[in-house]
Image (tube, rainbow, N blue to C red):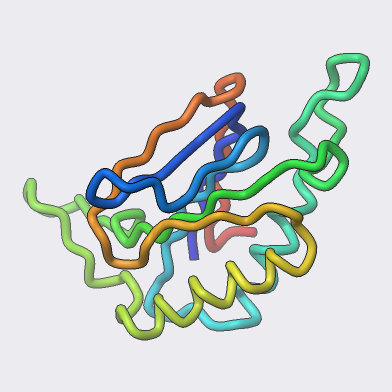
Length: 147
């Protein structure tokens, strides 16, 4: 599993010129599901993401979590995080999760995040999406198999 977490002032995702998800301060998270991922791995990533203290406190130190700032989430499935570019110029996606498995885990992540975060928006699984964001910092974190 891979999460690309971007601290944002605002973000939105559109499909066919219709806004399907939009947030203010919080995280835009691109989610890649790998071929060997499962629910316990998803739970581990969710806990780590929600616990990240990357918002500034009153002293300008990154000490506050998403919950501390009443932050919002925009979760977008992105299998291209599993692009393997080692050979040639055309990426291989052989290590990305099967679409059925990936959809199931993506929907699970959305459902679990909604249990603790007041605003959770999402993209449309498998759709061609346009993503707009105002990155705050910029501040971007990659969570991958090493966590």
